[in-house]
Length: 203
Image (cartoon, rainbow, N blue to C red; front, side):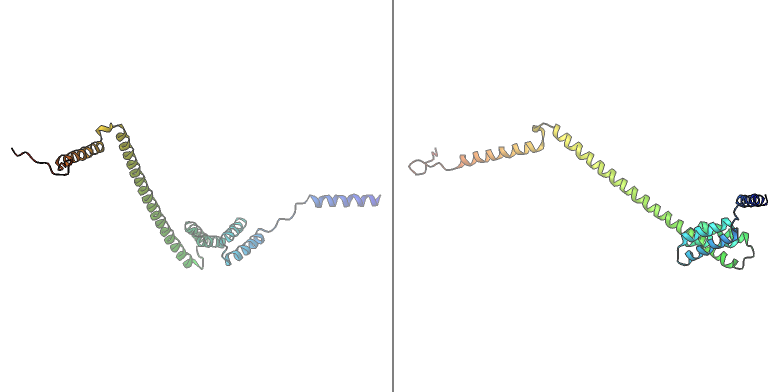
């Protein structure tokens, strides 16, 4: 009976232990691990991976310092508007930050770079617009030229041959050649069969 009782107690203890939820990992510990991994990526210039790590760490543990690192990654990736957003968030969370002067300088630089990028993009778009407009005008000009050539060829095929300038040019040339030949024959000296020149009646 005692053995059976001990068995039942053991089963109850095992069942109770199995029903207990597994201990949750400390968010700070996991955030620290993610932070360390992200920092290693940042050191070798893998800013996209570093950004993902810092964001994951901040999601677990809302340390203001993570915002600074997130801002730095965005700055290095050329996402200057996002960098400003997180730098300012860092200063809101950490108004007495020891690196406040540095962060303010980074904010000014990020804004200046963002303005430069926008200006460069605007110029690029203007140049692209001008190029497309020039291509459109050239295309329209070529289309008009082709249309005029087509109309000219169509009109030329509808005019009768005898009304075309080149027809009368040819006819005139043939007639002139015929007249010239006739005059040449008419003015040529007549040779008698005997070979002597003919006499001219001067009466």
